[in-house]
Image: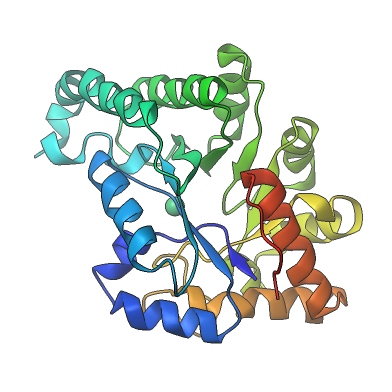
Length: 280
Ligand SMILES: [Zn+2]
């Protein structure tokens, strides 16, 4: 099975990464996508991909996560607007430069997106999101998208950027109608630890719809070290817990484990252009 969203650099700051990857492999993981969050993470993830090549294939992505657009310059909220305006051209310039010569592990642009719940100005987030879409179109890679209270802004961003490509909405938690908007655009939806919680009724409803009508657009993810699985709250999430998500899909929806793993792995490889002989 493939973890389509795991922040390995953040996990490495909390756990022994070698051990975490060994445990993931022992639990049946065959591949991991590590989206990036800041310019610093681009090279460090690419280095991890090389370092662990023989243990577990690691794909990477190039992006500027909305959470971290202003982090390093901001000491207090009053500075947000000015500091973000000072930093933006520099960050976007670095993103353009990094995309000029792609490391072989780079399979996507991201993590990008819009978060309606943070103090980073929305105008800045929209501008950076559009820049990611333009870049993804230009270099023909899919995008990895973060959302929170922002579906309408993301859909508006696609239109404004005239985005022609595809990608994944990670940790999708919208209802069926919102899911359809992305599916019509050819997007995939990432499902993770949220479904291990019974209270996540809306996500369960959408998952049921996906399994019945769009199984070919479903990806699995942990979002480690965030989004702990049910019963594992209070400890960092890890890729080795991805089977918890598979178990819920098997038990709640009556889909065979092999089918969940094979279909979501095929979906991942199709979206990110990964060629592989085996997903077992
Ligand atoms: Zn993420």
